[in-house]
Length: 77
Image 1 (cartoon, one colour):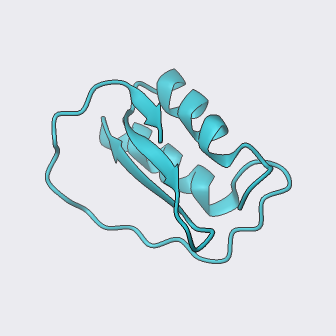
Image 2 (cartoon, rainbow, N blue to C red):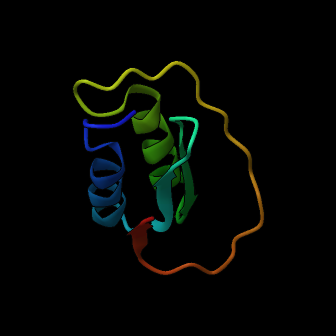
């Protein structure tokens, strides 16, 4: 969803919890994100994306566990 600062809010929250990764808008209007970090911190980010920032309309969240890529920092793509 555009116009609600979903990716930037996710970036700020990830940085405050020491989570690495990235978030990007897809052409179909969805947001895709990758999170790497302590399990409790990643769980907080996953909980956040179920709601999103104020004004967001989250219809569905799909979570996949994958091997860490060794990411550092958090980027908005």
